[in-house]
Image (cartoon, rainbow, N blue to C red; front, top):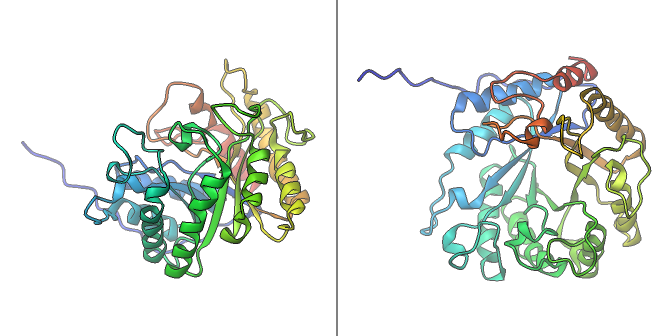
Length: 342
């Protein structure tokens, strides 16, 4: 049986991002993209849209075997093509391999017995990509039970993880900027088995001594059905909830630490109750970028969720994306390209 020759993909000459809004980034979803040309095309389209940053997930469970060997091929592709397109990379590390967790637990299960193993992997990642990956997020939404292995989640546990990871990463790559949190905004009451309120959780992190073990706070800020300038309140989930997190940082004398919004955006699904109309999605997104630039000097990045999925979910998450799996740009992509001067 004749097979076509494999497609040869090279990184190509280095490119630079042209943009009038350098705060703009996107959360890419290349983790499960198996064809290198699609990785390259995705990141080229990110650059051509005028975004300077990407946030990408690099799962520990996908790469490291029980014997300690690491399959770096896929991360090498993502990091290499991002660098070739002039994109700053924020690497989100998470998911625990089966050899590092108890039997019959999910990949999100990471307990104290494996903190040092995770820290060693994070340090190896930081060393390998020194000069090409500038930022690293420790975990994702640790205030959700789902993201903590369906266990009770406490800020004290997460701070102990930071205590293990931060010095290991800094020893391997002193230039790496370590981000903590990536907290999930929610309004769960005290004692909920599903989540801890993000404001409560952040206070708990500081009370447990987190301040010395991260260089920036990663945060998620979804607009849901509210416009970008809707006022924040503790009992409301909207884009400006970031300001409430910032108030807590100032309360704990940590105003010098910047914030990186690693997930944000609006959804325009025609039937989801938390969605808005397509034209509203465009306007609210542009308004949010303007608002952040004018009012939040402490925010370094706004990464829209999500640039593109490798395959459709056939549900409301598809309506967060900027580009279809077939690389068809949606109206918001075109609007952002114009907005950034491209």
